[in-house]
Image 1 (tube, rainbow, N blue to C red):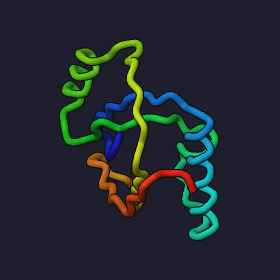
Image 2 (image 1 turned 120 degrees about the vertical axis):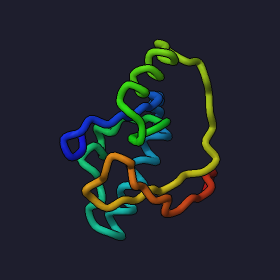
Image 3 (image 1 turned 90 degrees about the vertical axis):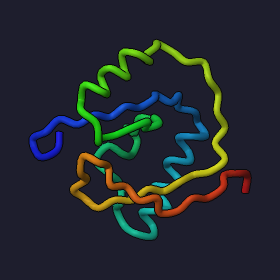
Image 4 (image 1 turned 180 degrees about the horizontal axis):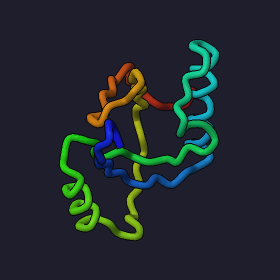
Length: 110
């Protein structure tokens, strides 16, 4: 809810792996070393891995309809990420997201 109005968010659940959790913790640690505490309230060890499909910008009923049409208990897909993107925003975050893609880097072995 933003400014007393409901807004929608549609996301896909992502299965956590050890590599994904370690990368998440490493990024947070490196950000903390360089910029201080940058974690959002939902970040850290309780972070739930997901992929945001859409956020804000549509009536709430659109999100409900899409969820009803595409929701399944499990989609058996596998994806290997080749890039990592860092999004930034200034609080308070509004209903349209207002994220800025700060940096995109290739992923791979060091």
